[in-house]
Every structure is written in C-alpha cells, then in structure tokens.
Image (cartoon, rainbow, N blue to C red; front, top):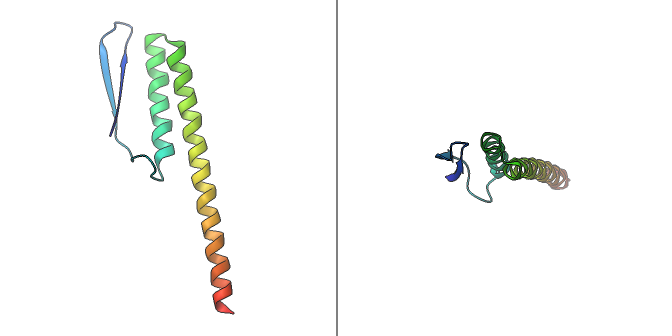
Amino acid sequence: MRVLTFAARTFEARTLTVHGPLKGEPMEGKADELKGRAKEAAGDLADSDRLQREGKADQAAGKLKQAFEDAKDKAEELVDKVKDKIDRK
C-alpha cells in the first residue's frame, strides 16, 4: 500500500491511499501511472506547477514500465516457442 499526502488550496491535509502491487511486481507501472494521476490532480487543486509536472513524469514512467513489461512478456513467449520447436525435433 502506498500513501500520497498533499495539501489542497485550503492547506487542509488530504491523504490518498493507492492500493497496488509492491515494487518489482508486473503491475508496478500501472501503480506509478495512477500515482502520477493523483499527483497531477493534487497539483491542480493546490495550483502547484511542480506537483503537476511530477505527476506527469510519474505517469510517463509508469507507461514506460508497462511497455517494458509487455516487451519482456513477448520475448519470453518467443523463447518458449523456439524451445518447443527445438524439443519437437
């Protein structure tokens, strides 16, 4: 569980809890993307350009991690197919 705390325009503390996979798990990219969306929304509420930029960066990092995981999965599938063809011979 990850907790993101931010201050709204009224400077009232708000806490958003993101339930998601732990670091290193396949869905980590999606968790980072959701964390980025939350940060960007917090930046909108607090009128913070820095927080908005951090949120966008987290979203981009999450998308990149997801793309890497997809490529890794496809490579593993290809290796398995090649192994199957070799074993059949």
